[in-house]
Amino acid sequence: MRKKRFLLLYGTQKGQAQAIAEEIAQQAEQHGFLANVFSLQDLEKFCLEEERDPVVIVISTTGSGEPPEPAAKFVREIQYKELPADYLAQLRYGLLALGDSEFTFFCNGGKIVDRRLQELGAKHFYDTGYADDSTGLEQVVDPWIEGLWAALNEEFAKRSGDPEKMEETKSAGDPEETKSAVGDQNAQNVPENLDLQMKAINLDSSPTPSTAPAKGDASDASAEAAPSLLRSVPPLCQCSLTVPSLPVPYLEVQILDCDGKVTFLPGFY
Ligand SMILES: Cc1cc2nc3c(=O)[nH]c(=O)nc-3n(C[C@H](O)[C@H](O)[C@H](O)COP(=O)(O)O)c2cc1C
Image (cartoon, rainbow, N blue to C red):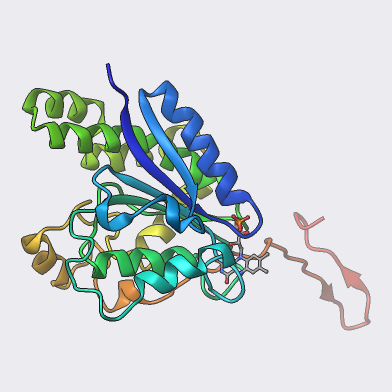
């Protein structure tokens, strides 16, 4: 059977995004997919405007919230103001943003690209992941990659219009399940602080927040614009918000007697 192809693009400054893209490409084989991997700087090797297969983008952030330098030309091209709002209407993509929450503009390189692709009519087939170098990229990267295969399968099933395959994929994990697959996995296999990490993602400025439907048509768009306690909506979701890391807990208590003698409270030493 012919392998299901997807385009895999990466934008990297120091090599992490490339390594993750290569890992995705390697795993793709085992899941029955074929990934064509290119750097975002190789503009002559891909054309988003004509791309009909799903696209996966892994992109880091550098400077103070800029996309990596090799991706700069790509970003300039998609930011061209004359592009019509349906320029990438056929495009279905998933994006994994890398960053470090110690920086003010967390994952901003990915957010810039994500936001612009949405403005040009492209749609997510899978929710955006925000991986944080300060807590360990793998805490988000690993579950994100694990959920990617079900999302891709569902996307291909949809294209072939095969309801049975859709059902099969659903039971294997559709976007609802794709999301919960990531969530469930977090709950079961990874440390407690990943829960916090995933909450930070939901609060972040994803154009399609992970608590919102994975894909948006016109009706989704109006539903998403309504105020909600369950999902992040504009303008808040478009801000570059970052949940700060807690400092290491530390407490020392000393009580001084009036004569200046130090008394340690029972239980504190
Ligand atoms: C000089 C420098 C600037 C950075 N600036 C940001 C930033 O503004 N926002 C952010 O979220 N991460 C920032 N990062 C963190 C990187 O995006 C993160 O470490 C990422 O994993 C690097 O991926 P790469 O090796 O593919 O470039 C910065 C890292 C460096 C070295």
